[in-house]
Length: 192
Image 1 (tube, rainbow, N blue to C red):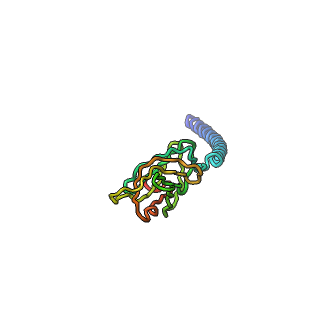
Image 2: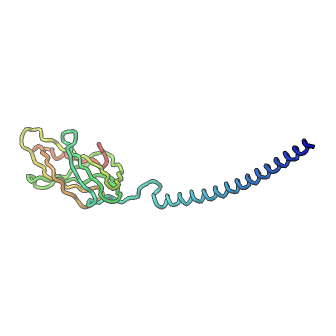
Image 3: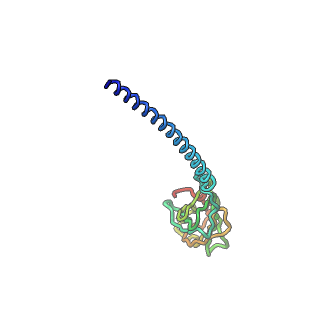
C-alpha cells in the first residue's frame, strides 16, 4: 500500500512537473517570440535612425571655409619645404584637392603662384579642433648671394574663394627657372 501511494505521488509529481514545463515552455516561447518581435522592431528603428541621422558611420560634411580655419607654418625636415597646417575651429568639414598658394615679395613685381605636384588628392574630414597639412616646396638659396625674400603667402583652401595671408620668411635664389621649382602638394599628403 505504501508503495502504491509513493507510486501515485511520483506520477502526480511527474505530471505536475510536465504541465509546469509545458506551460513554462509555452510562456517562455511566447515571451521569447514577443521579445524577438520587440527586439527586431527596436533593431529596425535603430537601423533606420542610424541610416537617416548619422550617415551610416560616414560624416556628411560640407567644404571647410577659410573663415573657420586657423593657419600656421613650420619649416619642414628637408631644406626647401614649408609645412602649412589648417586647424578646423567649427563644425566638421571636408577638404579635397590642392590649395592655391601665391608667394609675395616686396622685390618682385607680382605674386608667384605655386604649381601643383603630381600627387593624388585624398579626402580629409576635419572635426572641430582637428588639423591637416600640406607641403610647399621651393628652391632654397644656397648660392651664397642675396636672393629674393618671400615675406608672405596667400593661401586659398580647396573649393574656396577666400584667402588667408600668412607671414613667412623664405629666401629664393635669383636664377633662371627658380620659379619653376615652386610647387604645392594636395591637402592631407605628406607627414600629418
